[in-house]
Length: 318
Image (cartoon, rainbow, N blue to C red; front, side, top):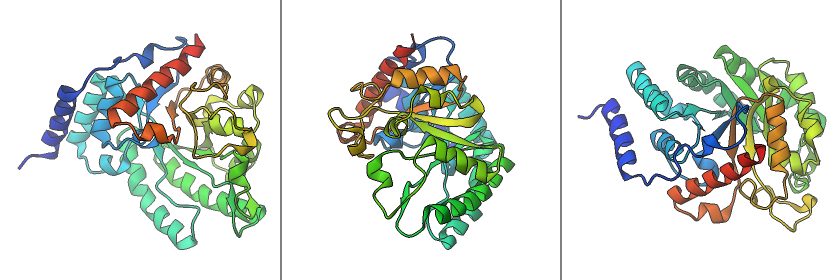
């Protein structure tokens, strides 16, 4: 029988042999030298199916500097296998970015409690791999709960989540959803701006809670550079970088129809990135375009197209 460690090395070797190098480390050379943030690959966000090993190899070959961690996979590795993976990542000059939160805090109480009960194990797996950032998004409306009732529920539940993550040395980022078409979709609008998210973070009362910023939601919420500069590096856990379709008024933009960074120029990604540099942000920046044309490409083509878009966006920092 083949050990998991042999499988790990075999998968890495096979991926490297079959790869067609496309601008290796190219993305890392783009943009000003004083930036601390990493150009991050999240395969699922661009419609690419890849396991952890495959994602690391794709990130390396296409010039990404960090990659999303998979808590489920990392939790299956023993100490030796985890050390092997760390060595592979060091050799490929790729680090872990931010993980997604595996807890459904938006559903009923039973579902939330089940997720919360399983969180310590996932969080511990991430901690063993050196992952210090976890993020999630906030649903911007509710069919039944009023703003105040929903706010209280979020503050209580997310406080409990943040406590578990803090026990494992992890920061917890919250992403507000800005489009009017999203927050007006149900009877009761909820948090959908930076200012409102600040209020929720304050109510959670945990020092490890901050933002997942997204240029798409920043644009849709009508915010500018001044809003970003009210934050510090400590306040920002992760970032998404996207553009918007041209010819559509901001209040009519649909959350599930976006463009790759710097594709149309509708969103001022240069100002967004420069503000992140100014506050000393040192975490991952990843594309999350929800783009049908991108998802129709092969995995290799989609990653290549995303790498090109990220290079184009980061070149605005020069």
